[in-house]
Structures are given as C-alpha cells and as structure tokens.
Length: 301
Image 1 (cartoon, one colour):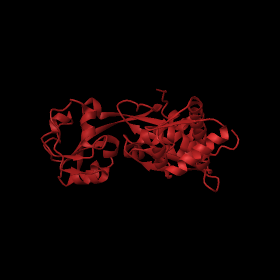
Image 2: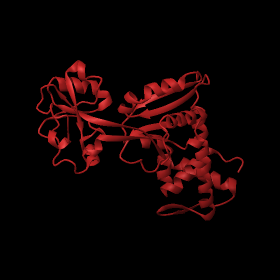
Image 3: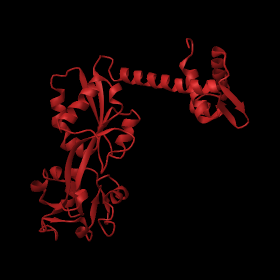
C-alpha cells in the first residue's frame, strides 16, 4: 500500500459512492479527466482493476469493493487525526467546542464551566449557541465536540446522556385577566396573543412537540427570541409568553410580571448531553463530558 496518496483514495471512494466518475469529480471539485487519471494511477500502482466502466457509470470490482472498505477506514482515521490536532491552538491550548441551546447557556453552564476551568490554564472552551434540533447533527458531523439540547427523547443516531431538567411557565403582566390563575394549561390561554419563540423555537415544531394538548394553534403576531426582550414586550402589553421559570424569575419584580405555572406535561423539559465518539475525542473534551455528566449524576441512555 506504500505510495498510495490520499487524493486518489478520496476520488476512488467518491466514484464508488456516486457510481459515476463525473459525479465523483464534481463532488471532489475536479474535472472528470483528472478524476479518471487518479483512479487509473491507483489501478496501475496496485496492478488491479478497481472499477468496471460501463455506459451507466462505474461499479467496483471485487478488489475495488475490498479497497473501498479499507479506504473508508483510512480516510476516517485521517479525519479523526486532523480533528484531534485541530483541537489544540498553535500555542498548545486545548480547544473544546461546546454547543448548547439558549436555556442551557443561561441556566446551567455558567457556574459549571467556571468550576471546570479552575486550575486548567491549558484549556479554552468555545461556547456556541444553537437550536436544540440542530445540536445532535452538529455533534454527529463534527462541527462541535459536545452538545446539550432539550427534547422529549434522546436524538437518534448519536449517544446521549441525561443532563438536567427545567420547567417553562406562562409570563403575563400584572393586571392581565389570567394573572390570578396561579396555574393553568396552555389551552386556557389561547384567547390571548402569544409571543414566540417557543420551546423548539418554531411554532410548527412546538405544535408537534406538545401533540394534541391544545385544541387550536395559538395566535402569534410577534416572534421574540431573546428572553429579556420577550419579557419587556410582555410588560408593554404586546402579548403573553412561554419562558423557562428560572429565567423568568429574574425579570418578574423589576418588570411587573407574573409567572403562571403551566400544568401541561410538556412544560417539564429534559436536557441531554451528547458527544461525537468520545473515545476518539481529545482528553480535555472527555474530561469536560465526564464532568458535566457527573455533576448531574446522570445515567447513560
């Protein structure tokens, strides 16, 4: 195998997967003639026919099928090696990319990250705010090392662990017709304009998340993603809003707002932590993952 170059393996793998040299060339940003030349050189080097060419495209020979499996493993190992090296800065500081949804960033991470970094001068953490429905994909694709998201169940296709839980409530201004209720299901608030965003951020995803617990969609005239801004809008009478209880408590007294307990089952949210192949991650990423899990005494799913 000595002498095989990585670009040749990449175009060969692409040709097998695309079943076409022209499509493989396009995928690898090459002209077709260059892609064909690299495959031909690979065949000459191994002294084996690797691809059957026909009018519909290409398909691997038995030797080509074997090489394809080995080449995939080689390219994956190179990708992991590059990722491991890239997890350190040029100065030798370990970089951990951690994605979390806004609720997690505000409620759970500040104290934990501060405690984790104490005494670890050779580690830096990039905190990335993202939507919960994007985070498992980001981890699976290697865009980030660790992700924290909320969902009713762990995301498929990636290993997740329980992390934390919270509750969302309904915030209304003092004097609002619902202010004296104390607690209620969201169904009882549907006659009033509701400010978005929602848990899971879009109305469609929110409605899918809560199932048949309300008889009709809420009326939404204004989308407000920032929690503090949303509470300000509620104070100005522009609507009522769903806000995590812990976050809402910071604004109630100063803005003249009331937090009502939502009795719906979906109002209790569960957060999960996931990592992309922790066994092959950098040691600092493994340490952070273990720390975040241990602080919640979470069990593996």
